[in-house]
Image 1 (cartoon, one colour):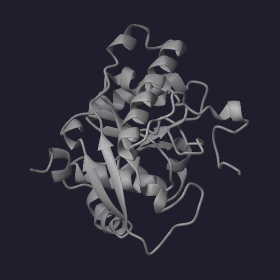
Image 2 (cartoon, rainbow, N blue to C red; image 1 turned 90 degrees about the horizontal axis):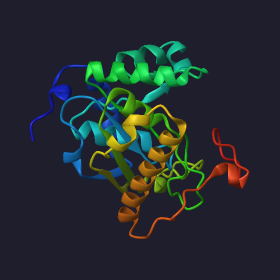
Image 3 (cartoon, rainbow, N blue to C red; image 1 turned 45 degrees about the vertical axis):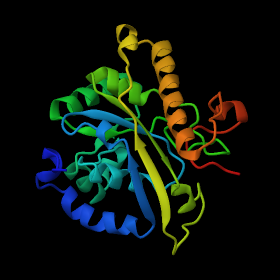
Image 4 (cartoon, rainbow, N blue to C red; image 1 turned 45 degrees about the horizontal axis):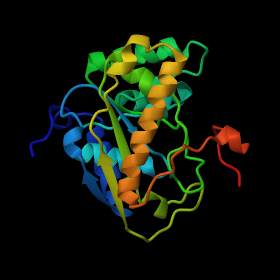
Length: 246
């Protein structure tokens, strides 16, 4: 399969990939499914589940192997950190401001992504899942805001196995090379939500549908049914951001 135009062009991702790909390969044997569902060109929003601090590296390698440059949403404050900020800008990462005008900022970011033809990886849970069995928990609306704001394909993604390398809030297990499966799903049809895309109820409903799709894909990878109801941290007295304290 020929390299996509994005991957074939020289960029800051080349030297990063030369380091990260073999490093991740020391820990993970990545099996990729549904690669045909990731657009070869143009903008998109990729929405994976999140159950390990190590899975962003696995997802980045999978996206790179699929022919696209892996760009994540990153907190705006990180762009002000010396060296790190320069690296984030050089690789086209997308800043996320923490302000009261976040909705408008999401639309601006979506339009920028669409204009530049970039893909962006957005964790719809916003943090590591709080679900004790590592199923996707209740999602946040950021991925839908971007997809609807920029008329971008919204691609659900499921990954499983990374938690054996680095358990959630645990310690890295090495030397150990683990089979990790990642699956790119077909783009989610969000047309029914477009007419009322700015309404909170619509965004919540669409996000619930997205999390259901991811959970269904993950159930296929794990070979067991997903719970019918997503885990809700607030209902269990848990903070929805930051480290989960046992």
